Image 1 (cartoon, rainbow, N blue to C red):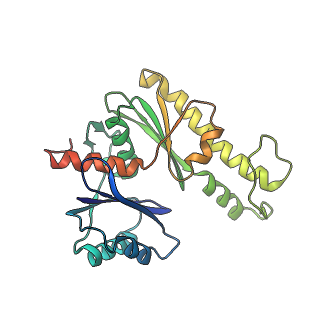
Image 2 (cartoon, rainbow, N blue to C red):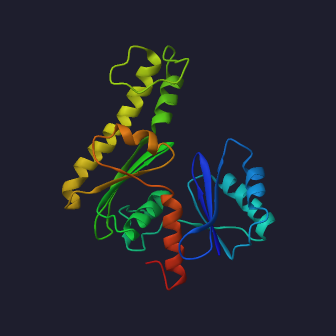
Length: 252
């Protein structure tokens, strides 16, 4: 039994894996809340996992916060997976492999293991990440931009007059500032996803499947003109694939 951890910029997601596939229990905690207390409440009473394995894109202080709760609840701290050059059939395009976010790598591992390559993977959260994965598992590279919510926040923080008093609606032609800001940022994100998918397609050698995940993926999906599939828990599923492979003879 293992406890898998996905420490993202906005939320921590976790799943207790009782076997090779499937979750015995799962949950999520927002960092803006009292994360330590929420985790301790969620984990108290769970069976003690043999291993705790985490994928983290947050700072060392938040990793230490989670490790302290794990130590209190289970008697041992997590192992943190750092991005490798290759694992589970996926080969990292970065010249310095560790600089690729481990979340992006694990989403590619999940897609490859699920038979979805060639594909374009979009992660829509605090950041908007894009990656192209070939059929043979070769990562061709990707892009990073602010996510739609962060775009809106950045615009409000950097201007004196663009300060909407309410959340905006997403429309084609806005006649007020709130709708103009929301529509501009969400449609910019959708346009970047579509442009990346179209530009990556010739190099992928086939019409790639477009897979989107992340906290804001469901909101972005209706804005896309290209066919796309919504994916849930890609990081945790990729982590499960990696753990399974590592325990049966190596993840490479």
